[in-house]
Length: 111
Image (tube, rainbow, N blue to C red):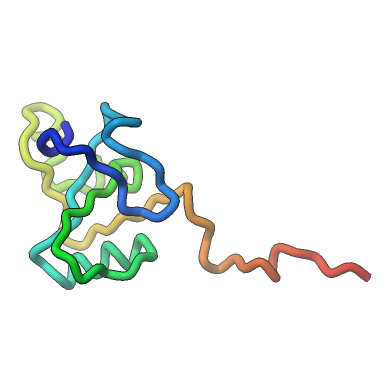
């Protein structure tokens, strides 16, 4: 279920998932041709949009595939191309701290 035979790694910072370490997981191609959509994915991952045309992939665990895919049932039954809903961006991340939390808000000052 990984695109081609090329090794994939997740583009989300701090995520260490690769197609080698998690061979039974799906890696979803980051949009390439729709620049605005690509920008939204990179913003959601808290990354700058690269100038290169390289392919980037996102590990399935950053999504709720059943809710986020256009063709989830068909894909599970018959395989084929993954179609993500147009407004979906990676939204599940256990490897990045919440932006609202800062070092100063988590530390207590000594008296």
